[in-house]
Image 1 (cartoon, rainbow, N blue to C red):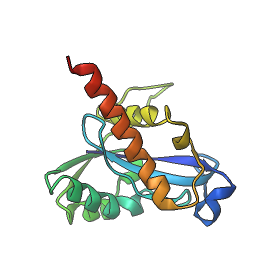
Image 2 (cartoon, rainbow, N blue to C red):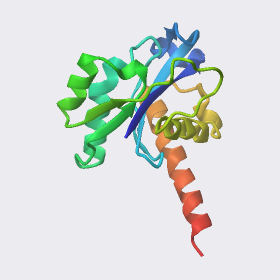
Image 3 (spheres, rainbow, N blue to C red):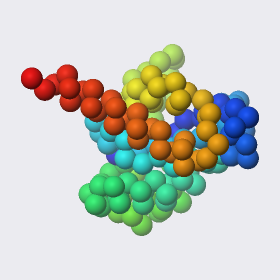
Length: 163
């Protein structure tokens, strides 16, 4: 499993859910996603953009273990999910974290092992206009649309692969 988050710019419909993400300088909602190693969506909680990624580890780990019947043992994460507390939170659900970080002499774009899968999933999601900005009033709707989009993508792949 691979964890990451993305901040969606808010609209007036976002209301109180919208927060300010200082790192990305955006006001909006943050979608945290967990995908398997093929890029299929497993869990997606929604928080205000000001929420820390580390604080969502418990919610993500619990949702992933429910979706996969507790078969996930390893998660690849970036620097935003490192630390003792996130590792302990994941360990309570039987998941071990492995950090994937960029080399210190990084310049420009760099393809990181395992991390590119979640970035590709975000790119797939941006093909659906409703997933580019936070147009929804209810967080349940924001949480549900990625599952619809990924179901459409999987059906499209199945149609192409079937004879």
